[in-house]
Image (cartoon, rainbow, N blue to C red; front, side, top):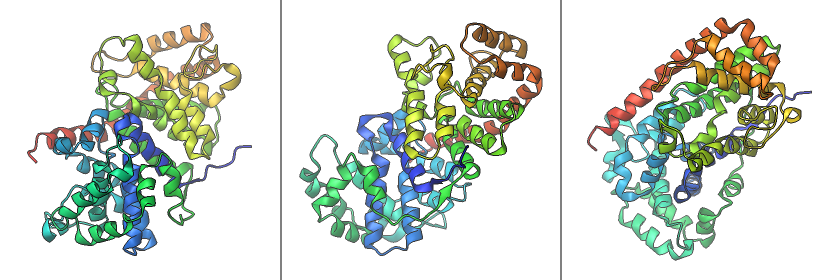
Length: 429
């Protein structure tokens, strides 16, 4: 019996935030650290529970607009922050249409807006939410901390940096609250803890707000856009896989709830590519053995990111096992037929079919008959499921048309994001 998914929203956000900071040791847990500092400041200021939740969402997702690994690393280096100042606007664009994150999106938009003796209360006639002022400070505190040094040896240095910029960069009320909470060594040890995920879980009386199959899909779509925007080669790949997998699931009599899970799994299936450097994602030629080792790790990370959340076993497996093969030759777990459910087999077929059928900048997509021949070879070799491919063959033209339509729709958002990044990068700061 399949139980409907009901996942606490804060756990979902914690895990996805942590995943974005997997990309390099120098930025590990930056967003969660900023979220924790923001929560402590907000609690000291006596903010209402709904405002603390807004702070958490904004803090945990504030760098979502940093699409590529290189950009995320630059944002942590104070001298290079201006080079990626565009990311606040991109983050706002990614989050603003989801009602769960509409308020947090405004804080993300302005999380690098200095207080400037009160002039930062508005930008272009728009009021800057107080959460953004808190986040300006909490983000900076996280960036000021050097992970190579013991945290307690940095307290005076970080506190002096913050104090010197009170009323110039940071809202004075936020600075006062920070100076109060930062007196405790435990505050700093929490900031530097490799248990920051658990520290945040223990820091608030979380509401019983959960996401189910219907509400997780638009969240998954946000992260699909982040993953796909990171590479010029796969701008709409995730949408194509999700559309193909859903079309096959419908034809193989999956329930409405399972179909919703399949779409979310399709959107999440390459989530682990957040850990892959841009030069590997964008390499037009064959990967070296070392580069291939890094790339093969992406589905491993997809599984563990989603599995950490809890409550999403089907989505986790369907998303992460798309490179597993029935004969045990796949990766990263080497699962065989006994471990691969029908949902995982559908996702594997959807991934291959989309990859060979979609247009890429370096080659046109294959027509359906050639794509099916590629799949047939993998069936005869014992890698892919023949029943799933038979379902694809029976309605291949319609399924391919669905894939193309959904990729075309998805590309509008992708093009908007890419154009935003290009335009904002070329605008003087």
